Image (cartoon, rainbow, N blue to C red; front, side, top):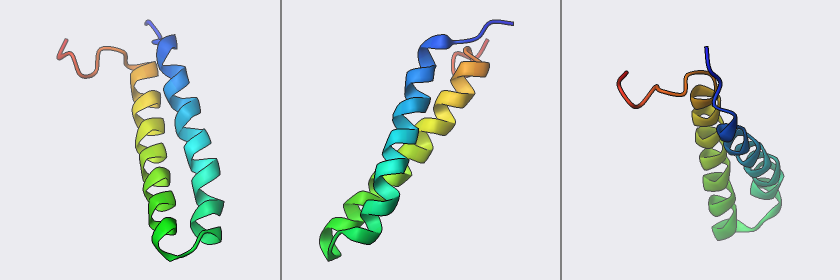
Length: 63
């Protein structure tokens, strides 16, 4: 079993985006809070993809 260590940075970037975006979505004013919520959504997607690709590196290659 091989582990894709290069995707750990994707997990970290997703966690950082979520850590910044969750408080910012409540702190910022009306049009900007939507942007922070989108950053949180992108962070969730990045973290999930990073976890998936770290433990199953050939997931999208069809092998």
